[in-house]
Length: 269
Image 1 (cartoon, rainbow, N blue to C red):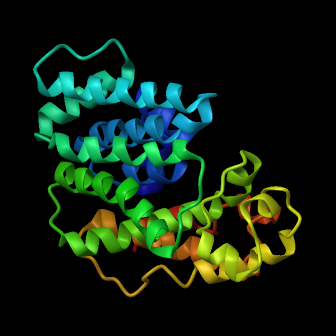
Image 2 (cartoon, rainbow, N blue to C red; image 1 turned 180 degrees about the vertical axis):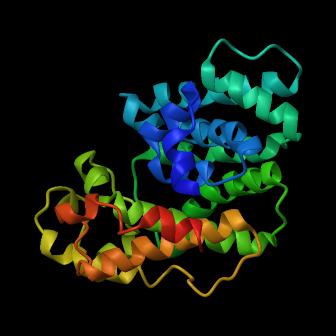
């Protein structure tokens, strides 16, 4: 059973790092066939490294330099150079070689993270969904290549948008504490808000209504063929139900507790 695998499986350094930084994708990796777990952990940990760029730098230029470091590290792998002396780069190099992963998907993921450094909210809902797409769809494409699972690109995009958007909604308290606003400006304007008033918590009572509006964007009527995408979509649905059951208040401490039987409900989806 999956639960036994999670309890007894010895974890590599990369898997331990992933468990600390992205528990949901760690869980999805552990539910995948054992032969592919190391590669998936490498992909997901690479994603956390580039995703946290804005959090670990003090200036935009430093963030761009950090992302360029990752861009160059990936490029060198494809050029046949020995991977840089970095645990994630080495694990990524092994996954790229073993599964013949395309470089362009990595480049897209890195490029998408440059938006984080701009420090501005998306202009409209379309821009927000574009951000979700570019930061998540290429990652899921890489995952499916590792797992050798086929899925139509439009289905991958739809599930990726759902997954990313729910992740952003759940992360709203943390992001606001970091003075980051991802809620699109058109939604803020519709609620007579600005980025400043939102960041200063002057209108916090409006946030549940905004979250409720954001939850109308995901497309839940999706039935993918890929086992991985089925599990990712189920995870999205469980978190969505949890948010709704909590009256859309993502600041409530109960939201830090995973939905009941999350692992089993995803594993046997």
